[in-house]
Length: 118
View 1 (cartoon, rainbow, N blue to C red):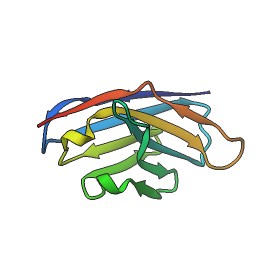
View 2 (view 1 turned 90 degrees about the horizontal axis):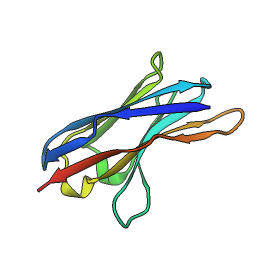
View 3 (view 1 turned 120 degrees about the horizontal axis):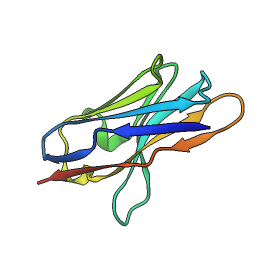
View 4 (view 1 turned 90 degrees about the vertical axis):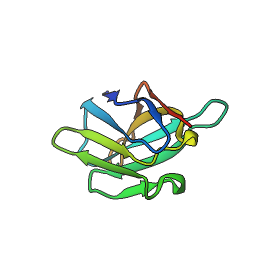
């Protein structure tokens, strides 16, 4: 089992910044990917960004150049620095952890609300 604890959501004006954090604990395999997905009201959950334990990153086109994902492997923590926020970034942001090798496992955090006012 892996537990994910998220923090850092909130309300911000358009153009502002927020930083999300997600700490993983439990049965952490060394080869894994952590990342962020988001779900706006009435829409499907979508990828925002992921980063593997080896440092490979994937970003959604809509956030490239504005968001930066990073991680601290020693702390099993992933961060999402969000700059230049837009009202369309408003959503519940979910942390995700999944294994890359070995037995497959996939876990979600409880979600943190990000609201961007215009």
